[in-house]
Length: 65
Image (tube, rainbow, N blue to C red; front, side, top):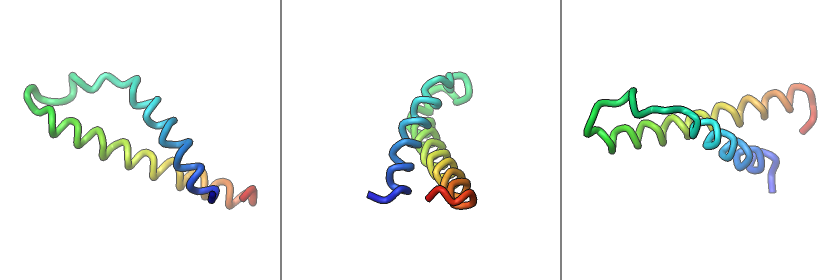
């Protein structure tokens, strides 16, 4: 397996764990459950992508990978 794939797996676990600590019920309007879930899903995907690319760039710049 490639290093980037493993990093995606680890970062997915990390982001889900971190997002679980945020209480988002007060941010969204009432009866907008589907929209809140879509937003939460897209936010999670975005964070996973950004964190993975940050670590890949970091490891590449210090030549660990």
